[in-house]
Image (cartoon, one colour):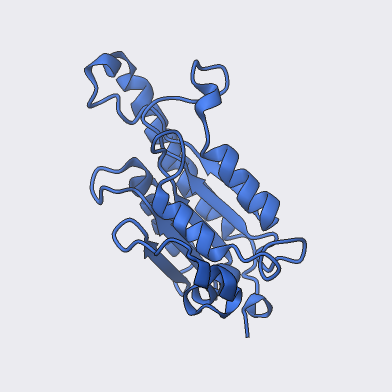
Length: 211
């Protein structure tokens, strides 16, 4: 039975581009996996505590960190909604990463997460694509690529709905058609990615769980 770990971190429950795209992904994934399991965390509505000295010292013996690490290790696929806030990821997502990354247990060359497909919906109000004026302000894809591919050896793919503020900012009114096209493409990409993952066999990751 396939398991999808799904995280949303956008602060607004309605009208969020990243949430709309992750929802489309999950819907398509469920169609392909009617008997599958979706482990869902809304870390904006139910934020995790920041990592403190006690949890850091405890590592995998900390109950919360163990639970989060087990969820990640057991997932056959991971889906993360990661809107850009102030040029980087939401602090709630950073808190999840700090809790779940346990060097020597699940981060490193023998990571139980190695090879796991991770799809990140990296929405943003403007555009930070290569060649744009704010290209060097992009710290969402750059950071998450390093974390998931570099620390966990996971397979990371990004879906990027951009220009999401075009409908609400008068100064961006001329960009509305591009924003709508980007949203439509992101929704299509999410559905296609979820369906493509159905061709991959569900992996047994029990060996990655802490005992």
